Image (cartoon, rainbow over all chains, first blue to last red; front, side, top):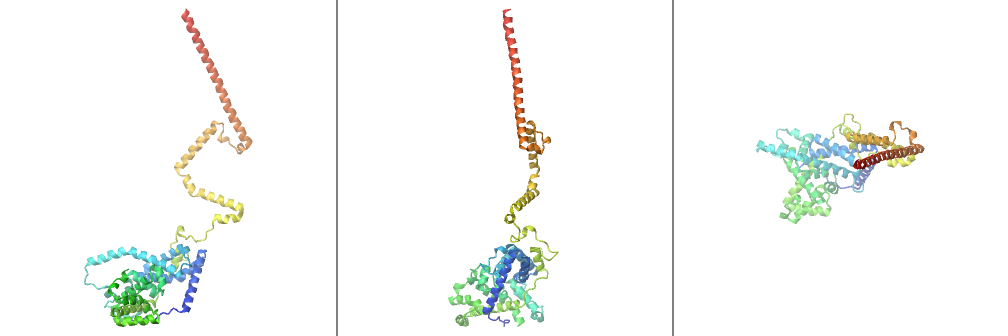
Length: 218
Length: 226
């Protein structure tokens, strides 16, 4: 049996109104920043840095990388705030797109390093070594460790890190950031059909990676 | 696209089902769509497996979502320090060049007209002095430009010296209209005098030459008749 299946998420009118009001507030803050209001900038950074750090951490799985990327995202936002146009889209989508572009750049930069690492692993000749999924669920760990929330979340995070990057970003935005398909399509620059497909495949890939863990939790 | 790979081998209903899959997991299908989806999944093993996997994946993610990652304590301070030079003293301050274009900066050509001519003149003078103090000064004091300027100065000084102007004796009073007229008249008179003197010298020289020639011609016949 899988863990608790998420409840359905009907878009309530009240939620939509609150979200619109929040976006209006953010757009106003951005406008105040452009007018040179330092307090508005501080408020914007204070309210947004947690979410941006969260996206970076979920994507990279590394605290130090996430910290560097979040800092870079805010520096980029600070320099490019004038390019935010409230008529073209909401602030959250704009900032997430900016962060996602940085994540893609970071992924491309580190891809070569990862490629050389995997080559090294190959030369080590450890053909009988554990698979990715097996490494996630090391049998030497006790049942209690697996069941503890912290350890479990660390395992899920580790598995998420191994999901293909184009599927990973889609599920992060959908399932962890609660964005709708249209917003995700806008951020990723792909059609909504592609977004839906990536979300399904990303969820499926994660479930397969965590299959062994599932048996131990249940 | 890679996500549509393998669709050819599956019935069209499965492709439709796959399109509806995320919405089915998220509970976003309408009643009619949901019943059509359920009907297909009940009879299709492959789609049922995909649905089960997608649901499990979403469940794992909802578990992960229950605790959002906590950013490091100093992150906000570092962000502020990097951008506005904020509150973290040990953070590295961003260089001036990296400051955004939207940072409010008084523009002289926008603000000057509001302050009248005096304001404009002051702004202009400040700009000129700034220019001399910074980039232009750096260019002017390069050795090759300095040498050119010195040569130009010497040649002007030499020309003025020849025309009777002594740079050492120059006073502000020398630049009044009457003084300038007087200087011009002096230069003119000097030139005329030099020309007249030279003419007198040439006339004397020419006369002497003629006398010499006359003497020579008178001597020659007389010696022939002798």
